[in-house]
Length: 161
Length: 121
Length: 116
Image 1 (cartoon, rainbow over the protein chains, first blue to last red):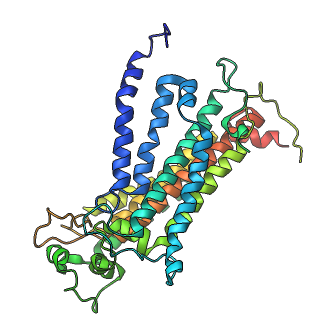
Image 2: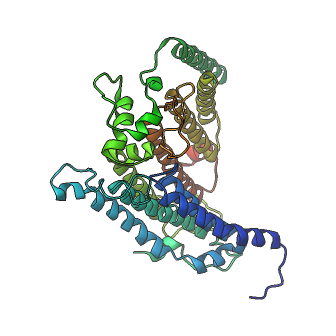
């Protein structure tokens, strides 16, 4: 795309270089939640900083072209349902509610090692990632609903039913 | 008058807080003193430690964690396995906050200079 | 060494209360609420510290004989508390946006006067 406005070239270059770094580091921290410091909450917030980098470099239209609010909104509900399903595995096997019933599979020190702890970790990571990203897109869409900038006529929340 | 009263109350609060924190640091013993648990031995023989004379919940959790959950990260094992109910409540609060923000900000744009409107209900 | 952490947390609490009670701008009131949250989290984490202890994670190749752990339970409770603080701040700021659109000002004493 050709635009002759080169006043924020440095910000665009830096955002181009740092966006894959934040995505990869966040996914690494989520995946290795049961063998190294970190976990679902910390990694989710790291990944959702990609939305903010996109907004700083390309404005609201660039961020809305790459990320859609409907998928993020449905992904958050999916993460919450997955957490409850993994916690109900204990009842299906005959014990109490939040029981670790798959703990004897895998070796100590692998990624797939401690049963439902790893599965719950991925569910919470997905939930925090999509939730915070959706909140950021909501507020940024509100900022851009300005007569000075041509934006869609309702915020992100107006389209979802 | 009100401001001097506020400053005096805050000074009393701060001095009482610093005094009680210093007293807590010097006189009250900590419950989990892990200096008689050798971590190297615990990692290689997890069943050699008995928990009949433990001095608190943290001592029992650290000694039995590798045996019962096979997770090397103690903090994640506590958050998702030993106290999973708290994490369920916290997921619920995340969901509530984001849904509340979505409902409050529906169809809101900048509406002119914002004169005082009549409430409809 | 942990005495510095404790005194800092009490100072953060006092500063947060002062900001919440004397400022008139509603965004500054929300900032004061956040400062109180951070002071409380600091004091909870600093309680479970043992001198000379290491992080409560069984790293498979760096443990030496003679090490012992710090307390992992307060760290797990502080994780939940941080997320709750962030959610409350987000909700309070959306209410600030709605207040500005209804009354047109960010000054809490003017809003109180406009309502009649």
